[in-house]
Image (cartoon, rainbow, N blue to C red; front, top):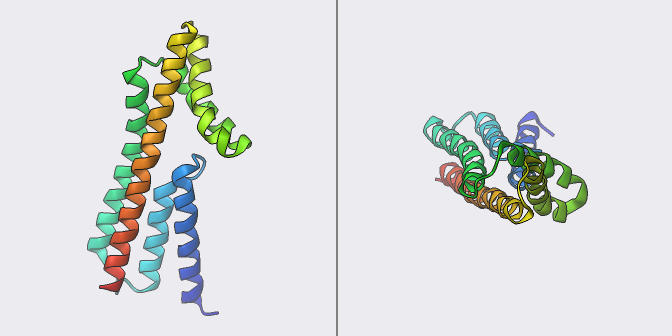
Length: 161
């Protein structure tokens, strides 16, 4: 196997792991996708994918980081979440990793709920905050998946045309 093939294999692996990272909060999703695409472009001596395309991909990556942060914050703020609820959602997200797909979806909700209860809120308000925070996270994942497919489409367009 020659070195270019190895570079392309690592680039493909980074892209696949990055797409998984859009859903799994432990991995830096779209930044990994971008690094994989940058590596593939570099391995091809930037002949298929040039700096204009890479700049656009980089901007989409930065947008994904903003979307990730803003979607969670907006979802939580719309329902009046406390800082303890946000901390709980973060801890719940990571704890949920140990419980498979159900934990990934339930962890942020349970964490935000417990954070609000710790803050002294009643169960009804705490559940509302938990749901709002969870909804913000889900919206962020959906938006990031859209950005991931846009990045893949842009990269493929630049590569093949």
